[in-house]
Image 1 (cartoon, helix red, strand yellow):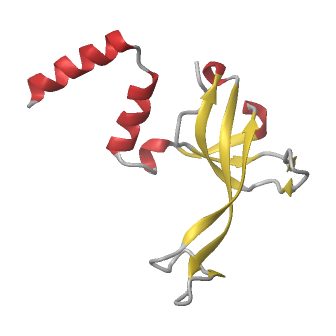
Image 2: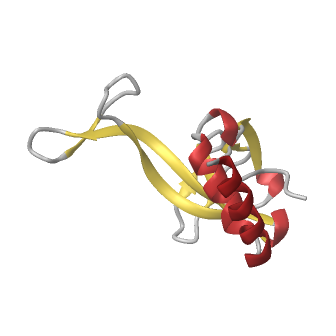
Length: 123
């Protein structure tokens, strides 16, 4: 069973070195974007500073309060359970459609057909 779920927000428990040699500090925030071998490892998108595009189309530093700001992706790394801690579950950070989409991606064709049949009854 997975300790973490797709789209959970996590933070690093320790400093890590990326495959490119960059050092990412402890407490860096990230999001689970892939689950490997039923939770043996996790692909995590790690974030840096808040940034945004200025009127000339160049990226500039920003803050979380700016309506156009987003967090810079600094790395996408394969991490293990002992390297990360849950900050917020996906249910608190992404919408229901994204959660359902992630679940559907993991289902077999047979189960997808069952879900489709059930959803048809809701219409």
